[in-house]
Length: 82
Image (tube, rainbow, N blue to C red; front, side, top):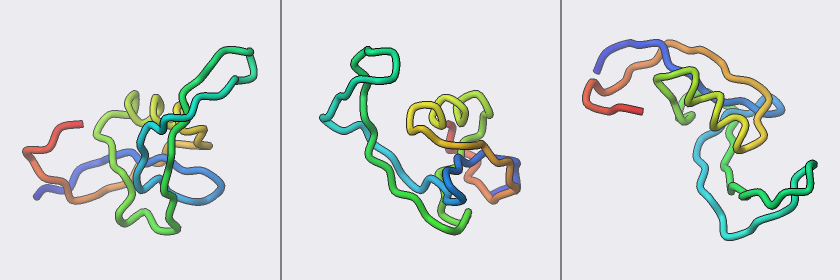
């Protein structure tokens, strides 16, 4: 494990812990059918879903309708890539 800067997604002061694509689709504000994600949010950044790349964190933030991406220093496995 090494210390590295990672990115986490926030919404309404909570941190994204996990997300997955649901079977539900709904119309977005432009009238197109959009995928709906089921998310689990938590109060602490510990255990939050960490992304090594800002671009990936921003893409997930947009998919799950998050508010912001926060940069944190965390211990990560060297073998894990995201």
